[in-house]
Length: 436
Image (cartoon, rainbow, N blue to C red; front, top):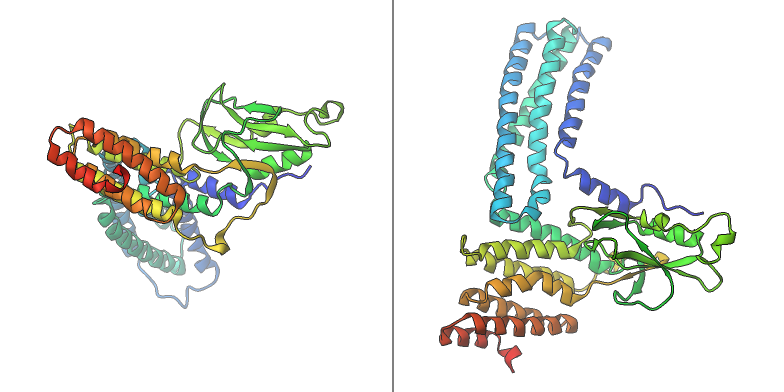
């Protein structure tokens, strides 16, 4: 049986995306490297460089390390407090769905890692120096490493101060979600079926075996390589019915397994390797939360939630909603822009079929909540209609049809929500193409 590679590029991408959301990983790595750097300085003594390198006094090295040890612990504690405040701000001001992106911010994680790594380095080096572990060459090496660590900490701190001032703010969170959604949309449009054959999402014909998930939650990732190899082993074909982002339970199948013309699932009762649904279900990663990388709709939904929260009476910030509408236009422009041939994903899984994303579903995720809760605000309604006009004129027929449909729906909501005829007329003029 041909198994999918254990370290395929798709698996590695999904794995490292999850690792970036763990705050302890980088500090742990930097801590290990810091301890290693201390013992690396001992090699200067073993290499016999004592007569070549300058002699640094023990007191100067101890003084530098003591200052670093005391200051880095304070800065690391301050960094953690600032990060927690930023996460709380992102959750309260934007949407809790954006927290994984805020946590995965590289500058912030690098800063915390540098502070903790410098603290560990200073403590371990100070203990080693005070116990006379080094000769003159080792002390000089520790002195140089200490200055290098100081330089790294200062540069990191300056960069981090600029980032922490904006981290968790609504505008910055919108930018982070936009980037995540744009990357997911761009990746999906160059591989609309993830390298598999095209299937209809509503295709129900056939007498195949439906495979269900033993875990209730959202599909985060599909290992199509594993599905392909298992389909070859069982001589069958697989149709995925639950794309990443789908909520699966006891009544929602993950996929359907159809036997091939020359046998397959139903004929394997007489073979040594019998068909087991769990073999196929294990190719799906199901968890309690959605992720941005393989789920373009989740990015659009998170942006819509940010705008919807801004439109609530308690916040009353239509400017943020207007900003999000402009972001949506940019994202859908990416979706219908010309494809780059060198990035197109070839069909490599010929026994697996995957449905493409439906543009109308993307519009539902992006605009329905904004149109509903912003229907009574003339400035939001006009900006929304202008966005629909721009998308309808982008040259994509499916997108134009979806834009016109949602424009009519938004216009009807505005007519029911607004009481001033002048406001209604202004919205109707902005949606003139859909009112004909």
